[in-house]
Length: 196
Image (tube, rainbow, N blue to C red; front, top):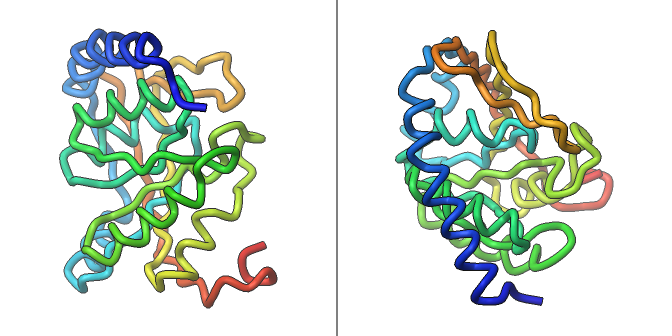
């Protein structure tokens, strides 16, 4: 089931209204970064990673990784529509699909993007959770392509936490936001024992 033109227009309006606020917030943040060398080394070696994060950290992740042409898997539902449109304003592209709809098509697109040298991104517990319980998609993609998973996590010293299934973190203006980028993880194949 695809979105109606009215729902698409509403999603576009939400993204257009949210972008100036989000961009203004992003400009105020101070960053503390650990592990950036992992990403840099992979890119220098021509091995674009599959970024792996929790769904509740999409907003600060969008701020940190902006304008790098990263292709993020985004749900085909209404929330996914406005999120994809907002992320596009920060320089991301979308592979539309999720565990509940269009996931196979999105994984095929991400395989092509990785082969072409693009970085992919996955919310490993999305789109419906449970929160902080990883699904198999990112691990399968890593095993199928040979590209490493690059896990990362973000926190802010001052933030709001949404009352949503994922507890989305919204950094407060002028807060310090920390990102910890883990070591790359190589996945050997796509067998059930590996992926699970």
